[in-house]
Amino acid sequence: MKNSALVKGCVIGFSIVAASVIGFYLWLSHYYKDGFSYGTWINGVYCTGKSINEINEELLSGREHGGLTVLKKDGESFRIKAQDISLTVSYTEPLRLYLDRQNPYLWIDNLIGSGGKKELKPQVEYDTDILEQILMDAGIPNAPLKTDGKVLIRKTKDGYVLVNEREGLLNGKKACLLIEDALENGNTEVDLAENECYEDLPLTEEMEESITLFQKISDFQDCRIIYQMGDDQVPVDASRACDFIKLDESGNFVLDEQGNLCADEEEVFAFVDWLADAYDTVGTERTFHATRGDIVKVEGGIYGNLIDREAEKEYLLDAFLQKKAEIHTPVYSQMARKQGLDDIGDTYIEVDMTEQKLYYYEEGKLLIDTPVVTGNTSLRRGTPCGTNYVYAKQKNRTLRGADYESFVRYWIPVKGAIGIHDASWRSEYGGEIYKKSGSHGCINTPLDEVAKLYDLVEIGTPCVMFY
Image (tube, rainbow, N blue to C red; front, side, top):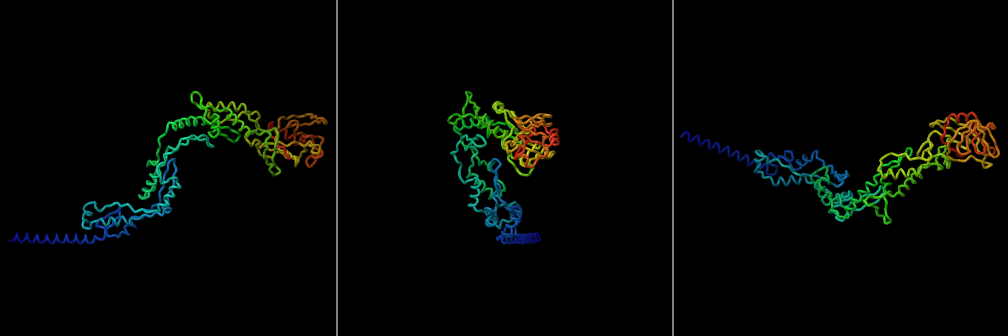
């Protein structure tokens, strides 16, 4: 009897506990029916007891979609900014859909299992029309691969190039879908090449032949000779060497019996002539900064550089065919003290016939500044303009002409019979003496000054003479 009562008491107690537990469970189920179940975690955020807006704010906290960098082939890239396409990110709708599917009576599964952990993707929205225009501007049209590409050899300012419209072609439609997917997944970068958005089309036999021919052209015009022209360097690169390839009357490439390209000697020689025309300076017009302060133009004279055209034509043709790679200084039939277009340098004689002054600069420093008397202009014996040079030096010389014979102690010829010398018969220099009582063309200079010049100046020094 006593045991029966004990059992009965236990049953009643268990029933009460069970009823309490069930009641509590049902109460919690009812409590969670309008919200996320107990133990719900979404993307690492605890959601129980929180509203959809609260969870959305937490999920977006610190997560800003700054846009997408699109990597194209050959290192090209561009960026799609979020604000440019009015891009917005929200978890509100995915949270609502997940809440609608959640069974409040199965909250216990979240407690004893992993049912409460969930990963949700946000809802991404943007202006598709603006995105399409941005992609079009970046060369990514929403279109399938073109299949009509050609293969051809084209001459440009940089030499011959191969235009292959059947290699590495962009599949625009595939690329657009890939970019849209990357935006929706919140990616910050997408590589079109790695995702095989570039494709090759099959080649015809004629196309294969063009590619083979271009390889020969590329090797032929790959010239690495550089002309050193004073401070300038003139490379004989593909932009110039492309003209060295011989063509027939129809403009087709000429091949020898072994199928190799042939050199056009006339074009090689024409380049040398062009180089000489550009850099020969004898007799050319020079711009000169006169001591008196202005810029003068000096034309004529015997000073300067002259390239030995025949020697250079022989050199260049051989060096080109031998595929030499070198920096080459041309052979000159006449060399100035400096090469290049600025061949005067900073050591020179300046004769200003208008001011009737002679100056001597050495390494840019003025060492002599003296008045002189130049050729008699009233008798049409004016000293000629030009850039000349000291080609000799002589002491105690007797100068002779048709109507004169003059002894000088210092003789510095600069052009033919025109030179700089002392003039013992003169007591005055400078001013306008030259107009009516000038020399036969020489530069008469005070004895002390010409003696100093004689000791300082070297043969080959330029002498710039102008009015």
